[in-house]
Image (cartoon, rainbow, N blue to C red; front, side, top):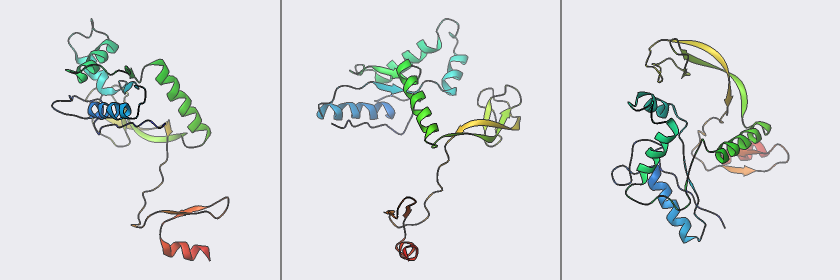
Length: 192
């Protein structure tokens, strides 16, 4: 049996089911739909390894007495209030089972050539060294305005260029090197 999963458009930001539904509402809906399918409860997965979470913890007045993981645990629990915790439990991206799965998936995608480690031109903050991205802007870690260009070896996934045609894509198998061709005119001209 296939299990249905729904994810809301908002990630692990400040929202609640009552005022600002987002990912929490999506995973609650998935849980209800999975129940209709007689599927076992699945754990809800929350991403916590984020710069925003690091900054929230760094700026918290109780950062010396409340650890980063404990802070995330409380923040996630608050997202479900006033309802009950999910029947399947909660996992974060720091959980050993999740990190093992992510490593396995990354290794497979590297072996298949979907992911690669390649040199990428980026900008680094001149104050703290945080990677600012492909274009120069204020550092999200320390707020400093200065950055310097540098080339770094990064894990990348090269997406194909966006499809420019309004026709529906169709596949024309022509042997080992078949291509997806969208336009009927291209299909006839290429087929001979």
